[in-house]
Image (cartoon, rainbow, N blue to C red; front, side, top):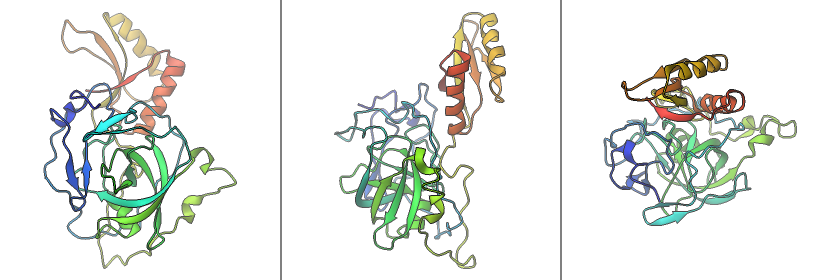
Length: 307
């Protein structure tokens, strides 16, 4: 069950659903948040919406599958939402399903996804109820044949007649941003085989809708991280907490040789512990790689905190 503590960064005392995409889809906060929550305000509007006018997204590249370490963030199983319990699929299990896709936009733009990343409606990401986070999937519009590759970093859509919830850019590429939903086929991608000689660069083979004339529509902004890796600006890795400054500085010195990110020693007050933190870190892929490196070579297992 999602706890009140896990919802604290959203300022909610209990789980609340929010209507989305023509009020056909409900969003919920993170089902498995990092250890220390980042404060965030409630959503500023009741109903979701997209850009004021349709934007050209043909220049926004698809997500490129890569092997990523999977953490507990976003992967609690089972979890319960709106009175229903969901269990995640086995890690890396084959998955293909046909059903209805919806999309989500500005209401959630800038808020955290289920694994602590920041949702960007122009990135190529998606929400799914039972796939592990992250998972890369190919989504094909069954009505027009257009396909995209997106990275799952969120949970939803929590309606029985929806199987996936795409970002605005992904829905626009598939040609259903204006209608709100579409019939799609969703296929999980084995990132370990993606770059193999057998598969080649399949990202170029994904069928795309024709590029629109720039004079007809304004271009959507291209995110810094099209796969959705962006983190809140106050994200740090905490490598340890000590009662003495000397012990904290010893760890700081050893960690300085493992990363180009700043290593800091922080103390909230004179009675608190000396905490060794690395960051800020703005990209979750870099954070996960650094976490693994520190675990293997630094002898400690850092965890995510928001400072």
